[in-house]
Image 1 (cartoon, rainbow, N blue to C red):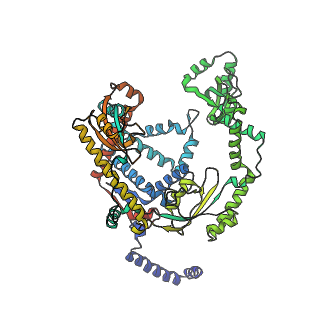
Image 2 (cartoon, rainbow, N blue to C red; image 1 turned 90 degrees about the horizontal axis):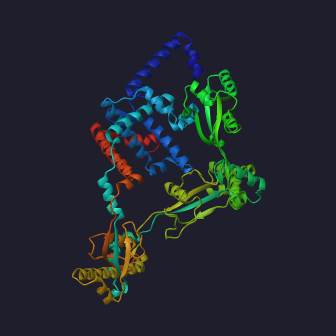
Image 3 (cartoon, rainbow, N blue to C red; image 1 turned 90 degrees about the vertical axis):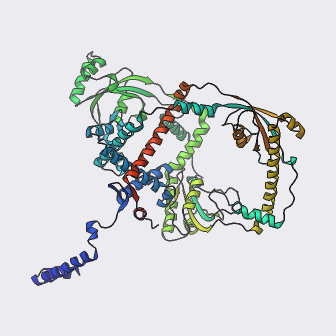
Length: 640
């Protein structure tokens, strides 16, 4: 067809006909709205904030970046559906809306940040420095991971500084409230001594047996308590380096190599560290000339004075070899004696002279004292890095994935990789079988969460494990949660009914005793009439975890003033407590202690955050915010 068009267009009549046809098509497209493609008529706005719009592309790029970060933290694949189940999309969109609102407010107030300040904030950021100096390579790595251009990052950094400027003006100088600190001290540090009587359930008569009507009424009122949980039938397989460990050999040389590697990393003691000073020159000739002056008797301090440098300007800090990024600088620092100066060395910024001002010797935990630990760790390390095992792992992984790509079930794919199949007939969200019994799930909680974020028939990504292995899963069936019928749980309903009646009777009995004590009868006399002892529990605080009082008893012990009797459910769930606070004490409030502990700073930070949240909410309301859920779903490839 294209050849025919080219042939026709070579003659004047053909060109005329084609011109007419293309003209008709263009007019038709314009009439039927195809021009919207070029005019941008399709709505691609996820949210509007005042006069600004957040586009679907910007949101999707930000979402993908956060998703990658989440996957790096989790060390396993996380699907878009799973991320949305965690609320990532809503949190991110709200963050982008807040940033837009604050930026517009800052601009309306006339706030601005000049380019020099923005660039300075970048070059002075610790995460972009090597050896105390700005490292463009680190910035480049960050930009690549974040998917940002240099100009895009500078723009975002400027917006961040603008928001910080607004924040500092609004709440930056807020101090911790001493009054609030004192209230927290009162709540946290008040101590009470309490007298307690534990009333067993046999102090009240057993309830009469209920008829079926009473049981059905009890069941109807508490139907949710007799509800099953959703369970899933799952097929799983696990591929682990341990599967190929049968012939793994660990030699003494392997142990020593691992031990030395850990020493260098700061484990099993600490590696040798050196503090060096670094003077930079524009070229090799200048560095050699300076070295000759030093060899001729010039002091290092005089060289610094000549270069108009202070010692703090040239100090690289106390570092191990692993902490010095540049190989040439590292080699020179660790080859130079203490107090001596190196020959000129080329580093990424020019030529340098290095003086070693301090050497801190390595400290080692004796190998023999930790040999067993080293053997365990060396074996685990070698399992992940042994080339033979890595190849077997890769072959098995590829065999499974090839079968899955071909549309085979997980059980069929497992045969290709010679991996045993694990069948789990019932699994609930707590990793149990639906009846409270723990299920051994390969991959643990992460796998359980992924299983319940999936569904029947979905193709799930393998979950990478900490040991370098993989877990695959396949949801074969879903048994949704449901209300059990009365007939299924009649015996359980009866037991709960009788326990409930007994508990109510015991609570009423205890309430009567509380009234008796309030009427003037001492607790010790009430206890004596019951044939029960009075226990004195001293030093009870609101955060106490006492085995007799339990959480409810501690809370009730502070429910009223000293001397006021109260009742509470016993810690074991079957007894009742009579509690009388008899003494209270509180040390004087010391603001200096709270200042030292950081409590007042934390209070100030929380107050500042609350103010900023309220301020941002007010700006959002003032500007007006609208969210297009349909476009949001489309941006994430979702249909609902």
